[in-house]
Image (cartoon, rainbow over all chains, first blue to last red; front, top):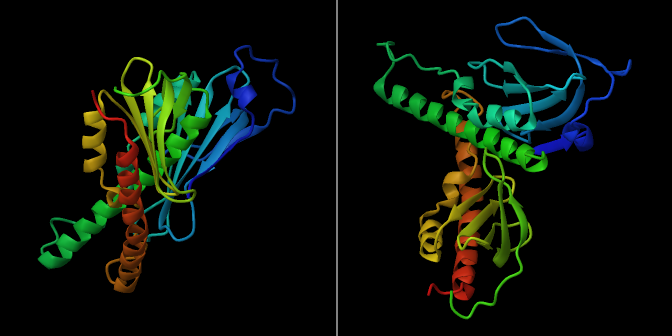
Length: 158
Length: 132
């Protein structure tokens, strides 16, 4: 079940940026395959599709830097041994660009296949079943991610 | 549309699945469903088109713009709620008990949502304004 928490909608909509206050926190976001993304900014939205039971889920967090741009933090988690967690961070100049980033995100890239078509020792039936499970996981990742994005964009002023 | 009074239009914002909300000036024509169960809402848009919103709680929420009531009827008739239910296998193929549990959960969810969905579609069609 998706849950979205908007920390400060007024802040997110504000056109004129206030002077950075000393208490603006430093954020450090993990990125898969890259060094951490560190910046100063507020967290304006935190959301997750995590609920009881699922083997995979998403977290999406939005941040706003004092100078105006936004940061979109997409985290994919999986309990499966064959899949790795994946963390991606995107910059966005506006709420509209946040929407574009999230609409264009393709969750199937987060699902790692656990079947090798060149494995000649693999019985055909097992190959077919593993392929079917791969498809189920891709469908579930898409459903969860898009349900979460729909909820976030519905709550943001986009 | 026949026998339909001019509605009072206001700003409507409907949640979509993975997309920006569907926003329009419109009026709610029909709402069918029970709290906590599947819900369908049909809106008339100020420019003469329609908007359909379908909600399967905790699973799926989306909305579409459709140009005519015939398109609405065709769309609802072709909508398969079971395809929108989450299905998750948490373990490897070797742990077949997990897959079986997941399949049973899907079957249970489908057995709950599917009849409820078609029941509200039937109730919606009974009160639906007929196309001119």
